[in-house]
Length: 391
Image (spheres, rainbow, N blue to C red):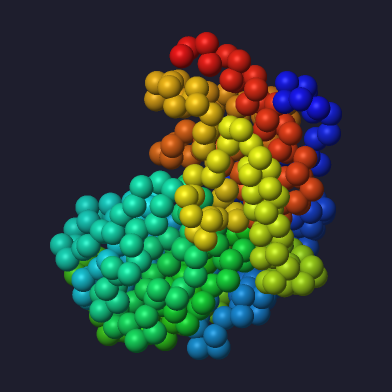
């Protein structure tokens, strides 16, 4: 088949969105029939279900026994903000940014919290900053996996064990898909809507004993909204980490997360989840190796994400287009595939370079990735015919 021929085999699921992400294979609304709808989350049944989410998450991820895990408001964003507003300001901060979400945390720390002793270690899309320059006598804030760039830290070896500051990691598109060295981190956040394909609006927050000690010994100079408060009279509100949520959670979303966690256990736990995500990246790497037009935005394979897989266009004609036409061409590829019902929501993030972003997390079947690639070539051929005439 030539690239101009329309493929005949479609992915079984067209859901390649980077959030909310694809539901687990075989999911249906039947999975929610036992949801505690119409009941208080403070009732015995509600508390039990919230505790189940925490206990199953802890077990699958292999959290250290002395680390706390809680459900917090406002998805991963809420969890990160909660950590920064509650913990930062005690000492200087190193902020790492190589894509839009990391840059957003820099903005919040410098313009909202207005902290002055802040160093920003920045890299352009496709690259990591120099991790050797991080000063662990300071607090450190970074995204483990840059969801909008497809660039992740390769491991945690660069993080010092004898650190004096806290290490805060936004790991929303890494947890359940990458090996997270928990003892290297003091705060880790994620949301249900990523690797396990859960629903939005709920965040997860993990705290090390060092983070708890900071909470109980340091009081920020600014007032904290109720949904950010983790201490009372200088002591941790430990109920947050036993399923006593700060605000009212959706019991439908809770039930859906329980279903996703049970599925993860059934397929073999964390190792199986990581293997599924890595297989999806491998499938796209095999295709891209022979592609005449597509390349990975992540320049170093060691820092290439297996979840938010970002592609750029390397075809010679594309570089000659105006920035507006480059953006238009990339969006046209995604639009063609969406109209065909083959791939939904795979356009690059609005702040990222023009290209495509294909979710490869554990709920995506590798067979669907393999069936998608001929469609990528076909859609590109349509766009090439249209836009190459402009150069």
